[in-house]
Image 1 (tube, one colour):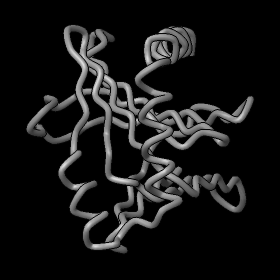
Image 2: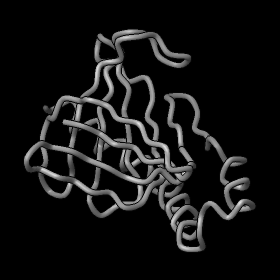
Image 3: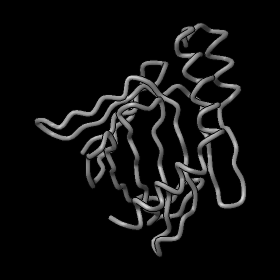
Image 4: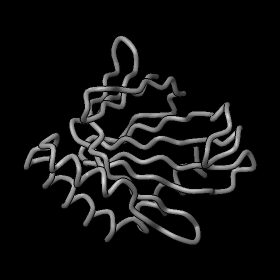
Length: 155
């Protein structure tokens, strides 16, 4: 399957992932990190969670030994899932990310959101999505994390 992550500045990234399932408005993918990154070592397994009716997607990162490393939530809009002719998911990334580590949580790219507002790169509706989704994640991430871990351990 292909993930297409569109950015506010019109650029986009494409990732080829393994399709796991699509049911109950959730698409699950798997991606193996093959080159060391600033955050995760080579061999880290990434599970992508794409909910049809949510304004966020999430990635869970696991070691090769299936030990949970972290999760990231990307606030987004316009999530679309295509199943024919090939499975594809696309979304517009709204800049703000929420990281969940076993020992801490934090928001990333808050300054970039402010810059985008100043430059009028994000409209009022997108600003509202960012604000409301931030509140939703802040209040419910523990429950979402439990659900995600259950799914990963039972695939």
